Length: 120
Image (cartoon, rainbow, N blue to C red; front, top):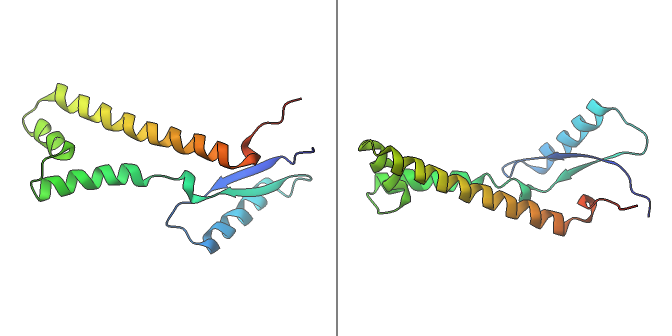
């Protein structure tokens, strides 16, 4: 099987189809229409910025409505200058975001056959 080298891009979840096509055109122009290459765009599935936005939103909502949770605990630790607790919570939330991003990348690798390297 002969594989075609790809020039890959990504667009955000809030982007429209026309923005994605514009990005594909811009990518094709910027690299020049190199012979034997095609421009592909990864679907918005790979752009899961919503995880970090949900964490930030939960911090705001828990603080605003005085709900118990990690967000309010984070704000409370910062207000009481409990830096070890604050650092632990930030590290934990960062690990959650990294784990979700890794899971998305592995899932995308399993779904899209173009991401697999050809052996041999």
